Length: 104
DNA sequence: TCATTGGCTATCA
DNA sequence: CTGATAGCCAATG
Image (cartoon, rainbow, N blue to C red; front, side, top):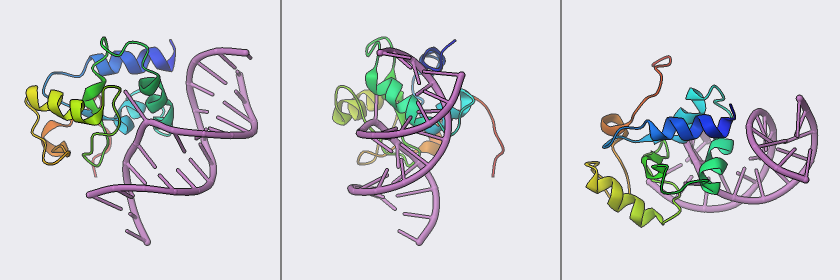
C-alpha cells in the first residue's frame, strides 16, 4: 500500500460539509513530516474528479491550492455548507479529524 | 528509474 | 516573529 493510495483513500472519506488539512492527512498516514509528499500527490492529482481534493485546505484556514483554481474551491465548499470568510474557513467548526491525537 | 521522505526557502496572515 | 505550506531538491529504498 503506497502512501499515495492511503492519502487518496483518506481524502475520499472526508464527509460533505467538512474539511481537513495536509498536516492531518500526513498525520493519519503516519508521516507527520511528510505533508509535502501529500501535497505533491494531490497536486499531481491522479484522479481530480474522483478525489474531493477541494476539502483539503491549510491549517491556517486558507484554501491552499486547487487544480481548478482556489476560487472554484471556495465556491464548491460554500455549496457544501462550509462558511468561508474572505477565503478562510472556520477550522474549529469544519475541521475533520481522522484520528484524535494529543490535544493541547 | 520511480516513488516516497526529509531539509530548506519564500510567502502570507 | 511564529506557524504553515498543492514548492524545489537531494537522498533513500
